Length: 124
Image (cartoon, rainbow, N blue to C red; front, side, top):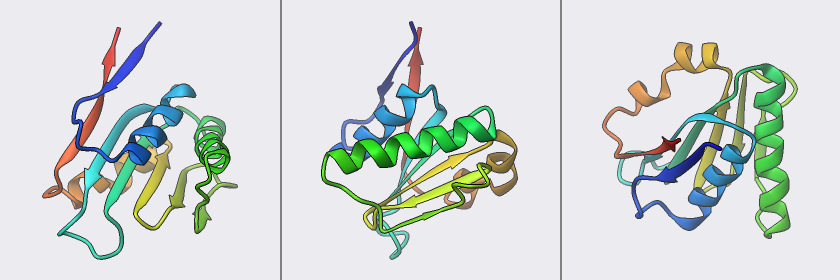
């Protein structure tokens, strides 16, 4: 069974939890970006990829549903029906779940290249 661990303990617990939830549905390439001091829009991005439109939607829905059970509701969800790029806005952090082609096209990691990042690494 494949497990992942967060390589930086400074990631806020709620962002860590969102990463864990994404991994529960086999999200790949899970990365957190610390945008504090870089962006006034949000403090953190959490990026993840699914292998298909269906998996992208399922990952995003799982994060939303489980965080709701924990008392946290998104202020905005965008792209859920399309399944290529789902954006879930929690104000202090934003979850982006991508189809690999969309992630490669938009390259948010490069766009926010100055941001400190936390990769959630595979542990086989």
